[in-house]
Image 1 (cartoon, helix red, strand yellow):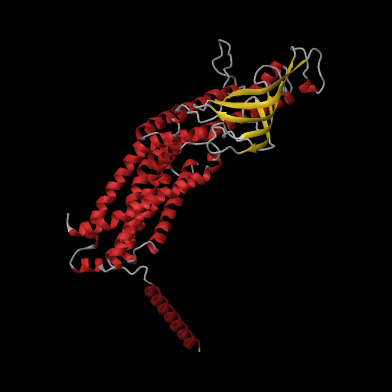
Image 2 (tube, rainbow, N blue to C red):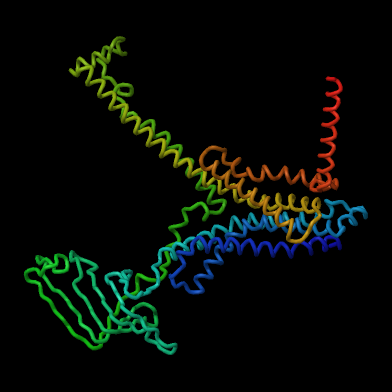
Length: 502
């Protein structure tokens, strides 16, 4: 490796890894802000939260790579131009393309890595990340009793506490609760209402070591229970004692109520439930599924015409002919059918209208059904193309970044960051627009998938051509001089026209 290659690569890797880390961090913060309500009060342990962030950090790498390559290549050649190192290289007979050669090889390597990552790692990370996120979203909130408010998230119980007294740091039995009211609700059977009420002066709440049971240790209270047979209307549901109802009151000084916490915490869902999504498939699986969906769409489309024949009375019906008659005799055969069935013209018109409405409804529903099937084909086909487009966008961003850096000759995190963000947003918007048009059937799927690269690649080639010729494309003086020339020519033409008119 020559010194020029070491110089260029040494200037590239620092900004690349820094930008990659910053972009991943920004996308993770976006995730946290979007799902902050799902994470609050779920009592997530650090291991679960760390695994979630790890999976989604992997998912952001394909998106972050183009921006990292764009910014780092722009900063590399911007610094070389700002400190006149590019000028020294050119004066020594080294062209710009020769100086870009080591980064060109690196960009190609990153593109290949991006394709491998999209095809192998990203489907696995999508499956793990989104299944874990679903489990977190469906998990119940942590048990949190508030003073004076009934807590109803425990199945079969409503609990109210008048006052909570914080326990000391060395306490292992939890806070002291005063004025406890606990309603027990039937969780099965036909019974309704509150059949058991527990009142206690004070108590404590804690969980066992395995966090599987919640224990209420109650002091100085009463347990009120109502018993009745199936034919008895309860006091809780009507407000008046029913016939045969029995009330039992049990006083206690120390009573332990044990409640299962099975409904709380995170329960892992079978990951096979999420494998149908296109983001969880690699390229070969996407190709197989796309072919299967196309065949299913074709078979469904062909069956629609056959099934629709049942909505027609005459056109597709087989007319029974006499043995000596080989074809239908010309004439008003509809009128003959009317006379034969002894129905009026009004009844015939009403039947025809009903049949027309039926076939219209059948056709509309089938159009919607077939359109949804076709959209599924487009989605899987689009994801197959994205395995390639995201890797090619890395190379396109390198062309733009290296050329822009050689033109503007500015390094650091000032102007290069602004230029990089503008081009990255342009890439992102074009990608989203192409995807939307492709999924809606407004664009051919390959054209929608490749639209961003098709637009930006010529821009990269143009900037490369301008950079090779030392273009002053972003030099302010060029545009000031051009504007002055334009104004001077305009004034000269106006003066000439005034002289001719005079």
